[in-house]
Structures are given as structure tokens and as C-alpha cells.
Image (cartoon, rainbow, N blue to C red):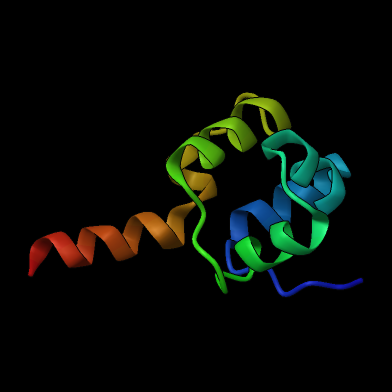
Length: 80
């Protein structure tokens, strides 16, 4: 099932490393359906989930780069 991933750098890394939504779901202990919702930002991704995904699926990547859209959104909220 194709999923529109809201995190552009995660989408790129998934393709390059051949990481599936199912593998990511297993890492954080959720169903693939729930993982798709998190990647589409229909449901929130928790910080500990983002850390585990980064460490286990994308070692060597910076969490702030992988989740850039979320980081940018938080920075904008803090500025207000």
C-alpha cells in the first residue's frame, strides 16, 4: 500500500535503505496501519518513537534531519 509520507527525508531514506513501513512499525511496536497514520501525520509520533525509528532504522542519520518538518513546526510554535 502506497503511503504519502509527510517527512520528506524519511521517505528518501526509506527508499535508499529499502526500509518498509512494516519494519518501522515493528520497531516501535505498532501495526503497519498505525505506522502509516504516523508517517502521514494523521496521528502524532511520540519522541521516543522518533528516537527508536532513527536509531534502529536509520543509524547515522540525525533525528532533526529525518523529522525536519516536525522540528520546523515546533520552532515556529516556540517563536510565537
